[in-house]
Length: 481
Image (tube, rainbow, N blue to C red; front, side):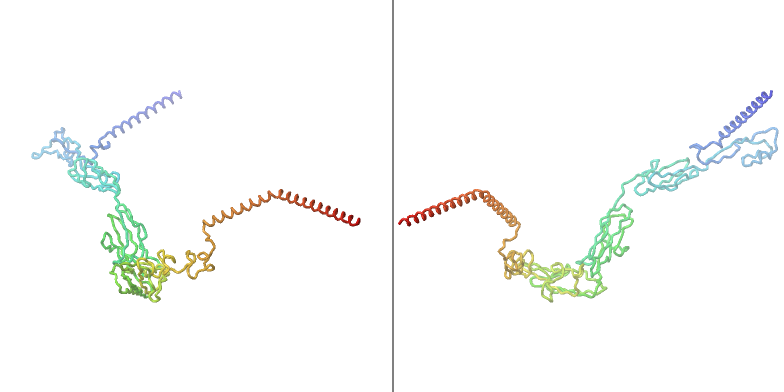
């Protein structure tokens, strides 16, 4: 009985639980399917406003009910009273009416760009809205998803939800070239330095170039510096100094630096003279026999024309610069330089207040008093002094002072050295051969000598015996008488 009672209670409990679950589930299913609970579809995604309105005439409602039950909800649009006689006819039948208050217009940017008014926008019925598509670097605007090809669009008289996507296309990056150079500030001048950096750059549109710097020559006494920059032939007033860098490049650019000079050492004067059979000129000036004088003051700008050129007359050529005071060939590093630029010296050969004369000689070269251009004691003895080792035994040279040129010893040439070795080797082999031949004959020679000596000894012995016998016989004959 106890178990039965317990089973009955258990069954009853299960039935109650099932009823509750079924009832709750049914309510939830009914509630989810109500209009105000359902998620909006594509066609009902817009904002709506719903009101209860009296959609028909007021009807009799018997028995009569108090009028305030109809008039309290005045927003419903029906008072329940009939104008005129004041007779109450009853209340209306109401119906819920919904109307759209705004539509959703959505703008989306595809890869490679952006749009204004991006995302969802609420637009009242009949209203308008605009959006502009802007491409990122390396892209261009293509079109909108509805086929429009203008980057800016305006959607007017909106009466439905809509979504528009802007698409963009990647393009090859546009590049520009930057070309740098440096030239003298004045015609005929000297640059006096170099540009450091990449002088031929390729830069993407809107990108930045790398810096370029003008570096003056080390040791220059007339210090060079960029006085102005020209960009595509026009003076650039935005950049000064020796370094520049192009920013946000939007076109091809030809950049030219104009260099000028400031004298940095003590006051100095340079004087140049033209010797016979020629002229001199300063920079790109006209040649003349008149002297050229360049004076430099410390801290002041240097002249633009810094080089002096020797110009020979017809049938002559420039040979060298003479020290004007000493009348001998200049000993500096620029003795044979043409043109000559003393003030841009980069070595210790700088000499202030110099005076030099251009020396011109016949085009043949021999006879100018300078042993140069392939001349030697043999081809031009008037210009070239004797030099030991030139192959000519000249005056003043002898076997003791220059045995190479004047000695009787065979020159130690490579060919002779080989011949000498060959001869020495031959003499050695000859000596060895003779010695071997002599040695091989020694036994025979010894036998001959030995035989000859034996014969002589025998002959002498026999002779002595004969003499002894004769003497003995003679003694006997003498006794008998």
